[in-house]
Length: 435
Ligand code: FAD
Image (cartoon, rainbow, N blue to C red; front, side):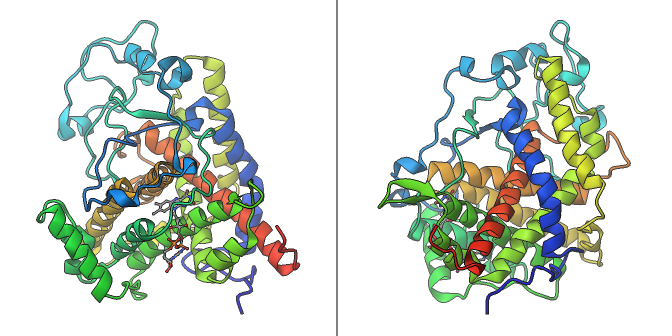
């Protein structure tokens, strides 16, 4: 009943499972190398602990397991130079006020508005210090300016895996995320029901309970590709998280970490549409990364070490080159084409921003870390797909370093999930389920 036909085409893409698996065979090692062997892509800066959930308060759903904890980097010396605030400040020159959106748009990319640069620093190495959301963003910015106080984490030391975070708290977040897909009746969406701008938190929490008790989970509207795509992105992200927790599962009997086939069967194998959405996300993010080829060719990684910069660039470009050498598997041009395109796009973007805000409601630090990275990664992919023109330079929306790091790490997560799903599938099909 649940066998997955690997020759089948994944709807809304131009590819079959086999095509994508074969692409992933080539891409997976390249992504592993970029995300594990470069300082630029293996660290992340975000606001992990200081943002309150804007929709409800529920301290009981906080995860107290050790596996939910995140090791943050508290001392500047433990960070590689490419992420050190002290080093970044040398690049900045005298502090400048925020330029405001209009000025930002008018100035050439990455040029300081006023003040000199630090000594011997190439102009192209001036890092972004915008702390305002660009109106074309799909996410709420996490880093809030290159020099703002944030939490620094090594992504290698904090792998995404089973944490034990579950129950009502986790379900409340997932339910709320899926409800953002309710484009048809805006009044039933979280955007209006739970926004802190609309009534007290207590009222919002009551509204949420009512929604849960009295309304069915909204289903995606098959007639509109944009709504379907929104649902697929969320469901594919959920599938990838489930894959990781099944792939690196903690067996409490043996005290060992390892794959859990039953977990895979329950959460993925018996729900082929979730696996299809995972592949869909792979196609979507692949296209976004491929589209950044020109941008990355000129990108300055600013590690303060020219050899390291060159190495990072070579690794990233080997990835985009491999993608460019393959036939396209995703066509974003079919979206936002009809007469309501502008409103629909705005709605799509606002709902995605709400998903981004919902990450502050995740009661497990490790899950929140990876949830934020992945939502930022998909948000960046959407921005690149729908607001980025490869042929233009200077007019494209700015891409923060945290967005680039999130995009590539999200791609690496999906790539890892695809490899894990294939291995799980082979175990199920061959009857070797004892892992
Ligand atoms: P859940 O996964 O909570 O799913 C809830 C419901 O959503 C299901 O009953 C089903 O109806 C529906 N559903 C499930 N999967 C899909 C899908 N792919 N598409 C569409 N609908 C679906 N736990 C960890 O161990 N490690 C992590 O890193 C981690 N990260 C998380 C990140 C976030 C943002 C969130 C909200 C939770 C995270 N969790 C993590 C918890 C984990 O996702 C589950 O919520 C938990 O394991 C409980 O699983 P469950 O079987 O009750 O169903």
